[in-house]
Image (tube, rainbow, N blue to C red; front, side):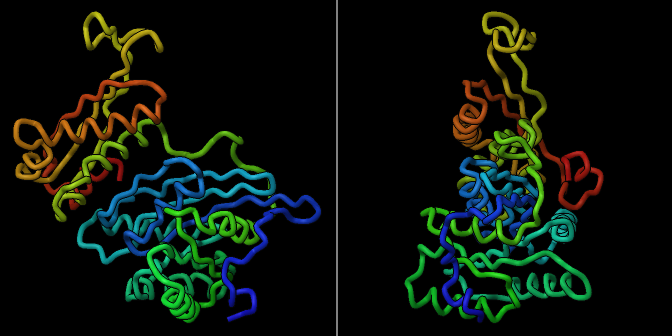
Length: 329
């Protein structure tokens, strides 16, 4: 372990470089499922741009969050968790991660402090080592997440084990939930980025479209409290977001800002039994999903919306190439 890595994350926190150098580039956050990548993305951006859940494989797209600072612009790519795929969807998610890694400047390899290094971590490390063999691959920063869940001795031991995993450029322990070492991590990542101009406007926080963000918020609400086998089977498509006459026909569009904003979306599952679970007795479960999602969508859009949800069955969509295409995968 180098002198710089013996006390990981002890940068001075200023973030500024001499000579007014500006750096900008793409940073992929990778790791096994449920290691805190989405929570970290939101903490770095300062706003919710990626949904979070205790269910594994919540992230299905390479969601970009944008952090703009005086000396740098960091474009974060929150990738799906790398796992042993059991469906065509799983294979496509793993392919998405590998494709993303080949296009970024820095990889933030997330390793939770409360879990021992396992086969999944070693699999990712081997991929990263291979990428850096024979050509200049991305810089790799080990991000030890969830340090608020372990004591100092356990953390010290974990950091030593992480250091043995591969030749990291730097190692930084953080807690996204507590906000610990987040500024330090941004300084460390900035140092690894290439010099270059700002790539996005100051006020842009994500590349995700409005409808994509709405569909993700609905899916996040649907994931709460469902059985283990169901989360992977849920997909959400926003059919339309439209202003309607609040006193007339609920399907007659009106000028933006003059009516009631209606979001119509469809939740897709793979079997009739799953449809029953999502809807619940007398529609009670779907009402809970709608209520939870609506509050998040209201915050996103800055106004109250009427959320119209439907549930449909798309049989075995995770294994069907045509249906995967229709659902955006």
